[in-house]
Length: 396
Image 1 (cartoon, rainbow, N blue to C red):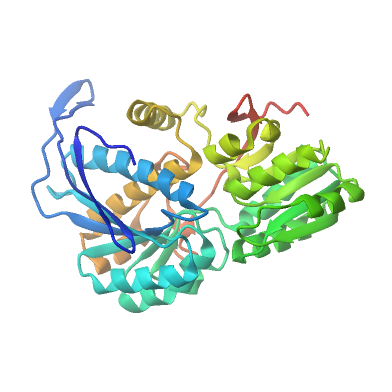
Image 2: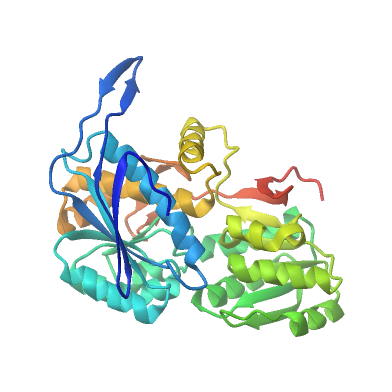
């Protein structure tokens, strides 16, 4: 985690890692309608957010990107005076995105009266395992990477999400692969967890409706690293494209081993691999990967360009999807606290009332009170080109 001269961060490591932002020096000058306003340093007691997610293990890179998005958002919010003079802060507990660990984290957060809302976990499996604990404890569980269609119903009215659902994303991925790119014979690699299983079911149904064919499906376990036998089977099936229902690290390995095996058909994936690690780990093997993404820094909207510049200035790198949705999540939480007050019940009552909260990903966020999901999600057709995620120009 990178530090900042305007921020004091305390890191505690026991069985978990806690990251606590308790003070931010805020002598920032904000331009408002052509004039200037001197920001005030928050002096009240911190308002605490609990975060459950992966800081170690196979999915640790996602947690690292979350932290970058969280810290930038908190620097901005606290630099502008916080919320009614109180700084926002977070405690990050390392669950490794393991359902057993996420349950332990949930119990800890529910028992801690300082925590007014929880963010996470990363995977739907880990999140849904803990949902009933948050529901019974009256603590909102706010998932921003939880695409499983049942996630917001696993707990009840205390479970909310800004993530696109698999009900939306999986058929859209099929449309992207078959209709937009023009693939007709598909091979599929699918990670065996709740997210992978639900994605495959919805994707397969739509592929059939579109008149295309899945010629072979290769399920694999989380943590698996040798895909050579599966690739032999796929090569024999002679597909014209490989669909990656995968996370970034295993997708990169699949791509490398596929190219080593002489498979030169295109890869197609979803936003789950829209992470710097996919490109860093995969190298030349992932060049030309098509991705149905959810964010691109080339979007000309002012809020995107302002965020991208601030992120670049702070971290000397471009923001990825997962840093961006973490950044957005903090601003949604801040809006809910401003609307309902810094209490568990106040946030719970405020979320359905929020309307048009500014968002880098969506432009504006308004929730459907029935599904507790964001209305009108959007997608972006991307391709990996010269080591970067860029808008696809339609050339195959």
